[in-house]
Length: 143
View 1 (cartoon, rainbow, N blue to C red):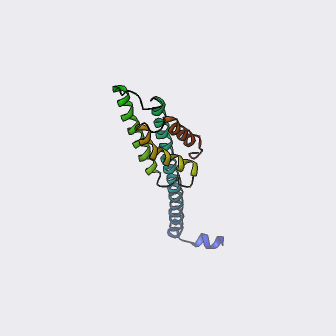
View 2: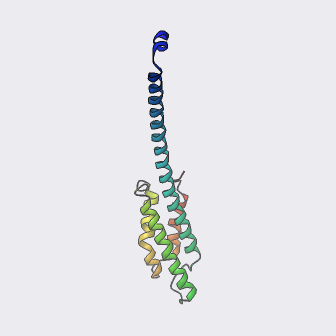
View 3: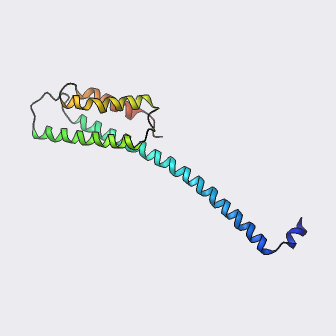
């Protein structure tokens, strides 16, 4: 065996080294792509959870019941809550179904999405919406 190696031309040795290097590069690239994909999933989940936290904070700053005399401040808060809801919706869509299997999160999100208008129209209080945001925030779906 040593005799065969000694008799091999340097071109063959360098070709073997090149092939091994190419294979190593391919393996590292595949591993990097897998890590990148999991990082992107993590970022999407984090963005959703963060947007829910901002929405919950916005709701907490608003009156419990919107059957009150409208003021400029309340109008601004209502616009802000709608903007926060849109941010949540955008973040939910960015998850591309990653959270659909988590029933607590998906059902709570569906409640928030469908009942926000009822709160704006004074049909429900913000307590129910805040409770659903707490359910989502309590779930361990990011880490």
